[in-house]
Picture 1 (cartoon, rainbow, N blue to C red):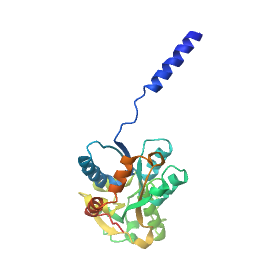
Picture 2 (tube, rainbow, N blue to C red; picture 1 turned 180 degrees about the horizontal axis):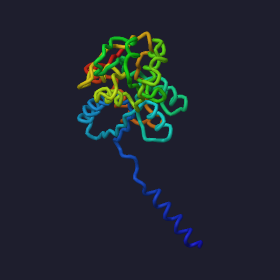
Picture 3 (cartoon, helix red, strand yellow; picture 1 turned 135 degrees about the vertical axis):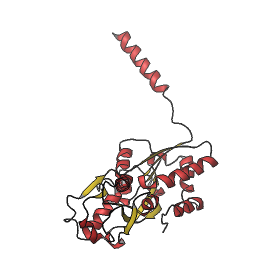
Picture 4 (spheres, one colour; picture 1 turned 90 degrees about the vertical axis):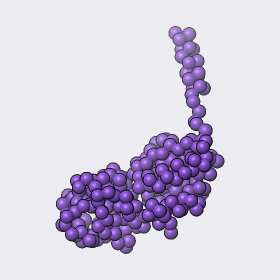
Length: 249
């Protein structure tokens, strides 16, 4: 029995000591779903200039991404679609607070293929189905609920809201005609093929859509991550953001 246990311990030591190390030049990036296209373009451009860098990208609802990072998922850089989830990770000391900066801003709009006249928040109660991101994890949904509540139509929309896992799923529902319309970001509506922008949600009804970014605590001393982080604040990045419809101030 002792011989068997000794053999097992030796085997485990070999397995742990021969486990493959983290790949050099690999950057794990967790970003809000609404940033997918702009981040893909920026990472592709950066990779062409830095051939040794490989990006592993994870897009989704900011709350879901924050939960993954909290549970140990690999992430070197986090870009959220609101300050709440960045604050959450900062409170857990999972991001480097000194690296926190604002990446971009956006605007909440209502888009769809509704045959009914929809030009303002007050027209929404006349619709049958309205898509929003789940407010518990999707910032776009949280912004939308704030606007719905402040506009005083929350009771009238009760039972009509269709919850989506992220803002891109909201847009998909609108594109497929599964809902009369959806709350999405202006940058999403610009890329829609079937759904059209029906109206811009008045800014006074919800907090400004902000995209804070920060390097995670475990990557705080990673030079390659810091270099890409600096690139995201540079002139090329800002130019691409503007082209995709994001606001920088």
